[in-house]
Length: 435
Image (tube, rainbow, N blue to C red; front, side):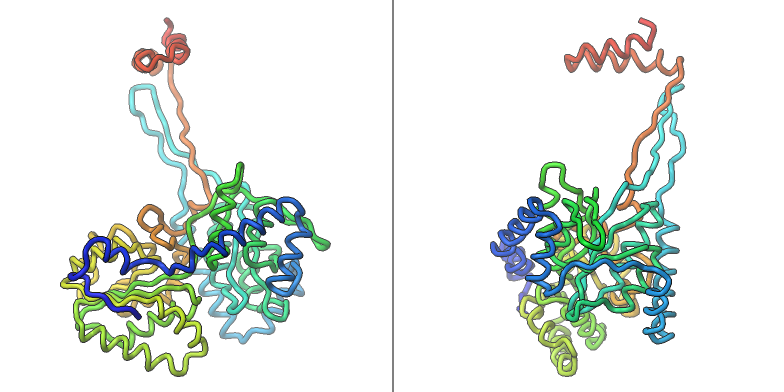
């Protein structure tokens, strides 16, 4: 990990110290994604199949979640795994049902003029679930369950196939727990293209969707970005690229816990980024030594080491300076392993999810605590929140006006319309005021 002393850096230096990995924005990714989207727009399912064979080695495949398929998946899992998946699914469902937006109360702003906010589910959602080297069934639960709670009837879920072209039984069981009827084995930018334009295959069809969801690697993140920029292209949930974690520690923190958390994100992807912030130079030394010690028997050590090469270890003078670093970086995940973490919360303006204290492992948020782990990356937390039930819904204002309300407010609206030079607007108000 690269080391920096925050107090010795000017504004530009601080931004450079917190820069995301350059390879996330490589021209080959941008150009490659554009080629895939253009091809799928022209040739549909045939292009998706060609790219899937070229990049993943397997053609797209639909998995119908019928009773035999789900039962076989459940039987292939140890009972403890089944129970753990169900606990996680239940917690995600409980949290999102409790936080689902509901239609607001009527608010009378002027006598006889009442308005409220009404919420409705979006028509269609395309959900990308990362996979391939690791089956991230947790990302399926964290997206499909909020979608179903919101009222989306048939979310379209895509996920990369395993190396043998199949799918992990936990993915099938998680999909069933989320109330899905099918999933598609397609990964990468070609999957995003299929969701954007629609695609027909021998065993079924993927319809074009209204909004794209899900985290992914640099290719998936770029595909979502380009798809949203197309004329009449789908909306997107947020920039949700390779994982990020910032861990803030003081001299009383447990180095082994901080190191374990850093590695938990570094093992995700070579493009993942971890940042350690501390008020103690000695603590940084202890944590980095623990990172090296824990790497020795980590199954995904090669991935973690590549990620750590873009990691940052930043020494700050005090926790106020730590807040500056937090809000400038806008981390996807933020772990506060300091003596009084609650004292920092009011000063944090940019973070996807915050984990307070040594017991609040980011891993709990990844799997089972309840809130969705789909969070903005690349500084998106400065303006965006994480995925919620509301992400799968739209809101609209509803207004009702009595005759008396029109008489009282229409003259005001008419005057303002004429002040803007919009006479037709003014006349529409005058007619309702009896003028």
